[in-house]
Length: 380
Image (cartoon, rainbow, N blue to C red; front, side):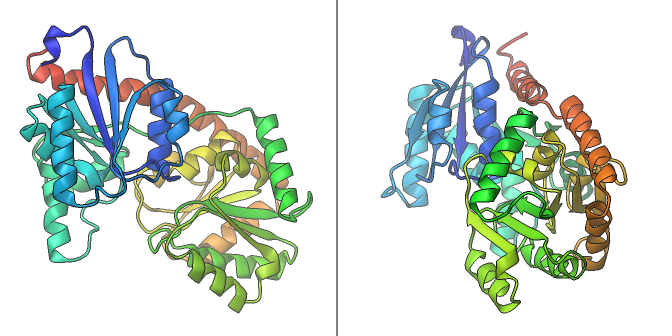
């Protein structure tokens, strides 16, 4: 289908353009990709659109499903009509939750190929039906893109999929460090966090997997040594009310700031002394890339592709999942040494600048598109 057009068409399906890392990656991809080789259309299944105006500004064609179109069958039929009308060469599911949608619509709509996504631990779904659907989501697509080698290796070890799996790691935008620090300083001051306070924090969805309770446990230990320290938890999610209640129960409300979703949250990391990630499962954590991009050292659990970003003892520290004592020890080690924070922050900046550029992510995705088209005989 793509051979009779100057540009091969790519239809990208995404659940929503919420404030999460995968959605931010899509926004950055649309901002960084050229239009010389491919034409893009974006379909957003749910009308939650934190990044919509940013993506719209790139000039890409966008279709947002209305809120009343809530049934799975109705959405599937709408997608099939879009595919038959737009006639893309490739249907690309940006998030794992859309892999089955993409597989079905590409076949019913007669697209040439379908690409799925893998952004976290394979088969972490709970319940028999969800695990079956999860397996189908890995196997029904023609090609699968994993954003970390760890996720690809885990999938291979379980012998779930026989088809191609391509590793295209997330990219990160490197902002101006002085501007980011000024932005962070002003924002933190508006929340009552003045210069001189030791600040640890994170950015992420507040759910069971991200394990913010562990970070509260760590922070309570940190307060025993640094009673003027502050904890900044940026993000939103189903567990936000519970976390706020927990902060209140522990009597640390004066030391913890939970502002919700914040525009430009990646630049706020420049105002932190240490960025922490306490996840139990991950793909390639954006918050660690973004911490590196503003030269902030990190302490992270060894979840998913974390160790592809963090070189333990060089750009930060990696500790076992759920190990409060180990994370506390490493956070205190960094808080007690400005020189170590500076050295690790600069090492992290060098690493993400050289290995996780947006250009490399864009080239990697386009390379997978070309592999799909070549496989179908549409290009030489």
